[in-house]
Image (cartoon, rainbow, N blue to C red; front, side):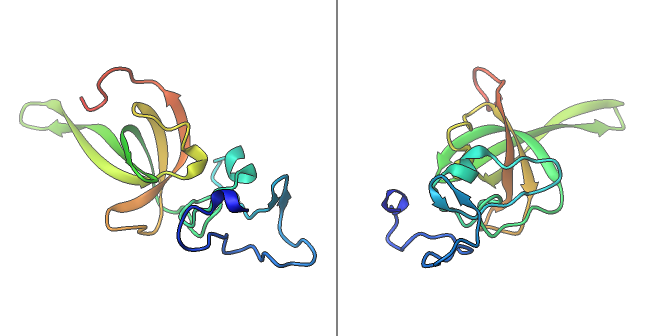
Length: 155
């Protein structure tokens, strides 16, 4: 239990009672751990089931439900703790010239420690909308595809 106690406050999962005499929750190889299915065809990662991380904003092990829209984007920054910046490219039609122009939006998404080793700059992620987690974060990573974009990601 001491391996994931890196914060000043005691880290525990909200839905797990640590002093239980008998096991009511799902038991894994590392002890009692709470996890859930997000639904909508997204599989719960193995790291979320068997890992020891504590993250209350994780959609698989925390108190966050995924609802609303799903977006795909390319990761352009992983410098923040448990937060990534993704870029979504799209085409905007200009009626006067009968042509399209390229546009993009950047958005922030919470990245669970279950995906921490998989997410790198250039990898394509699917994020699902959830309640506001901070000032700028309103989505959560639910799937990671391997790195497809090489070179400079920001262009």
